[in-house]
Structure formats: C-alpha cells, structure tokens
Length: 280
Image 1 (cartoon, helix red, strand yellow):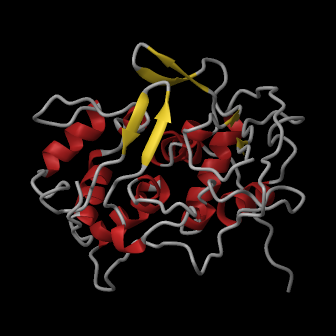
Image 2 (tube, rainbow, N blue to C red; image 1 turned 180 degrees about the horizontal axis):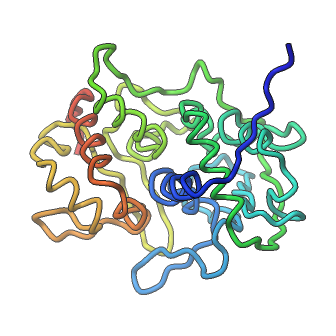
C-alpha cells in the first residue's frame, strides 16, 4: 500500500497554533529573517519576515570557508517555498532534506523537530503559507565539506520513562526551542558535549558584542535558586529577575515573552530535572 500523502489543510485553529509554534516556541524567524542592531535590540528587518538571510560572521560557529544561508520560507514561488508541496516542507522540517533532495546544514534543527507531532507540523505549514510572500533570492549554503547530522548521533536531552505529562510537555518544548543547542558548550570541531548539556558557555559575537550562554541547569551556578516566577519573568522581560541585568539580544526573549504560562511552567519543571552542572 502506498504511504498516505502528507497534507496540511488550512483551518483557523491550525493557523493560530502554527503562529504560536513558529513565532514563539521554535523562533523560526530568528534564523530565517535578516536582522539589524537598533538601540540595543537585535531586530528583524521590517517587511522581511521569513525572507531568509546569510548568517553574519561570528554569530554561529562555522568551519573556515563556510557561508551558511537560512532560506526564504515565505510563500514566494520563485525564491521561497511557494512551489513546495506540504510533504516537501514537512521533509525539510523533520527530515533535513530540501526540495529536490538537497541535505540541509545541521544548523537547521531537523533532528530536534523530528519529535514534532503531525498536527504541529501541519499547523506550522499552514501558518508559513499565510505569510506575505517576499521575493528574496539567496545563494545556497556553501561548506568545505558535507555536514549533516546522523540522527543516531544527535544529542537528545534525557527524559525519565515515568515522567509526568507536564515534564513530557517541557521536554517537547525544550526540543522544539533548541535550548540545548545554545546552552551546551561546543568543542573546536563543532561537536557538543553531552556531559555538559545545558551548562552554558557558548559564545556569540555580533553588533551586540560578545555574549555567552547561561548555565540553565539546577545547580548553584545555574538556575538552581530561581523560582518558577523568576524564570517566567526573566523569559518575558529579557532581564535576569531580581538583578535587572539585561540578557543579550541574541537570546530570543522577544519570542518567549508570548509563551503560554503553562508552557513556561512545563519548561521550568523539566529543566529542574536535568543533571546539575557546576560551571559559571
């Protein structure tokens, strides 16, 4: 029997849920939109939402000779995904393969998105198709050698088999948001350290200066002393609660500020269960 064709029928419910996932949980436009540094904020350029970008040097860790491009994901038929089928978009999101069979660079977190439910992927596709099409031709990613994550080697945050529904929801949201991607240190060869997952220490450089990701494990050096309310206020305001210290604009709190309180609670509950790491 032939496999069922993957289709995403548009409904108001899917449109709203897709917007929430794309804009707030997965922060897709942080990568897939050009940005500019304005008055201390790292902001997406107006009228270019989802139009893609060539990643600025220093913003991500790349081997020499690389040029990494986040493609145009607006429904423009010539330069975006307007001519793609729902199945082709789904394969890019969860399988890491673009239309025509081209493997995507592993900066696209397809190995995390593989946990997305069918309904969530369909909702994301419906929302992406609702975007204003932007004609923005971009080159394809150029790498000195092929880089594609082996799904069996990808770092996966642990989850206890007897975890509650809330912890499972938190684990799911952390995967989609890619928290371990930025909050786990990287070796010179680009590999992440599973033993230091969520321990922070990754550096980012850009017009905003140099930023170092925080330790978000439940250790004294991490967020062990943070209450759920402190965690929520920090995500929503972009300031470390109780200190007033401003987070770097590379941290997408502008997206997370609109997370549902129940989802923030689930993320916090899950992070309280990860192994504590004593790194500051």
